[in-house]
Length: 279
Image (cartoon, rainbow, N blue to C red; front, side, top):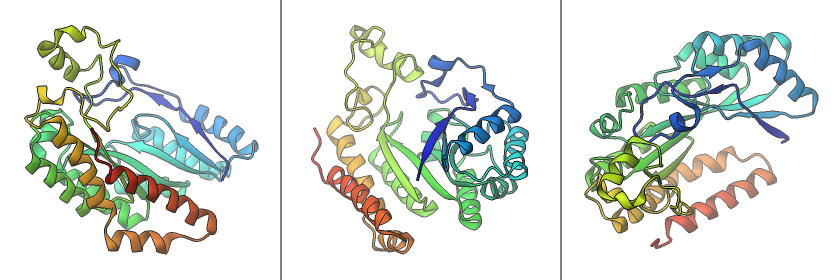
């Protein structure tokens, strides 16, 4: 399917201690008006594209704007499917129903953890109850979801990691990704790391080639070793993806040979990473 990407907003109202967005975009949220977004979508459609991935940190940053964009797409006959990112608590069931009607087929959410204390430690500003409710809505409406999760955050233990794995299986997103919390330069977490490792300075000389897949100074804010975190992330992938019910659900979704090929490729990559020993 011919697809492209678009930006309609920059910045995020969240205050998460691990996020580098404020370092790039500042703390002021800037978003394009619905009319400007719709004009671009009309051009995108005229060029033959059929899918758009909105790259905003939070497409749903302004509820009124989200509604205006969706209603405008329907009114103008913009027949595109699309994916966006949203923050738990920023969308309600009515808005998501309208989003689906306007072509949205997947929403990406930063779930991060299945332990409330961990969420509070990183100043996520959401509750497990809100996350459960949001995913219940998506299942009811029929919108696919991508849950982003992390391990190795401040206060993390093997027990809280197990709670996260259990929680992700409970809310049952369409797909899930697991990463090791990385203290990006410019973030609050990185400032905590530099207190213990002043030799890192501004972090400009760091090798981040294994970003999110290998532990990176997490021992400063969690009692878990690099080896434990490297194993934990692979265990999380195995626990979520290698389940008979989950695999059967995906097999039922396949409607073409091309889809089958994509699922096999993605499955192979997940399998290879899940069973790799890591460093």
